[in-house]
Image (tube, rainbow, N blue to C red; front, side, top):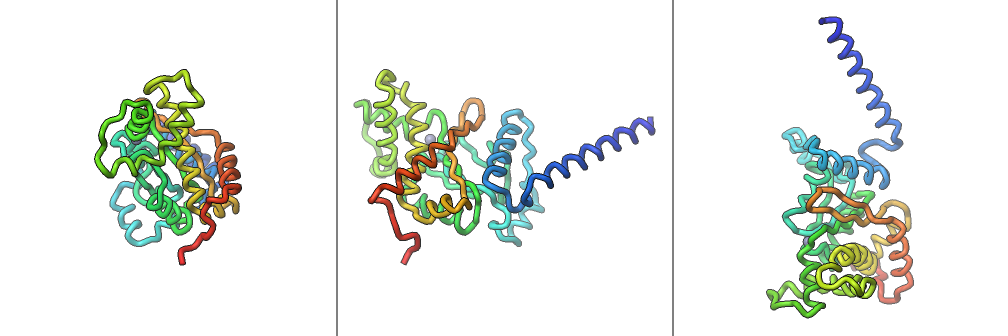
Length: 260
Ligand SMILES: [Zn+2]
């Protein structure tokens, strides 16, 4: 019995050593991952969440002590903008914890001045190498715009129309690309278009973000979270380069990176 236990603990030690080696050989240190390494870390965290195997790490008293004593810029590795929807709990769905991700939440994950400023802070000051614009299935903000544009709208509280105004072009593109999809059938296409719209609006407003992407310091990616399955679906990265090139040709883009 004792012998068998020794055998097992030896095997366990071997597995741990191999895992540590695999991690170390990943290139840069854990504190300074590349954009692609961050996508991999978030993908793995989401897979653990979906499988019911979340570790819930970085949520203990030791992490809080660290958070109070250290610079978040040395730890947080992703900036995420997503919807305020209660079905999209960002840290939970990526299985991350305190001081791991810099999060902006706003209905419809729109990017206007406040959101662009928060993103600039996450990229330039917290120095996260990745920005995720995360839309989600069944988004009520996109749904409200789709209803309005198809003549099924109703009165909205005074601050909601200006909030969701940036979603209008996204829904219009989805409707013209899918004229066969009537009513809310257009919603999945509109939700994806709204992710691209957020990235477009960020690049239009933020020369600093464009420069960080051009310089290879930051990668911007789009993704859709499925509120029913818990899965994050990453959208094609090539589209982001297309949007950036389009914005660079647009004379209406903001040019001065720094506030005066
Ligand atoms: Zn939403």
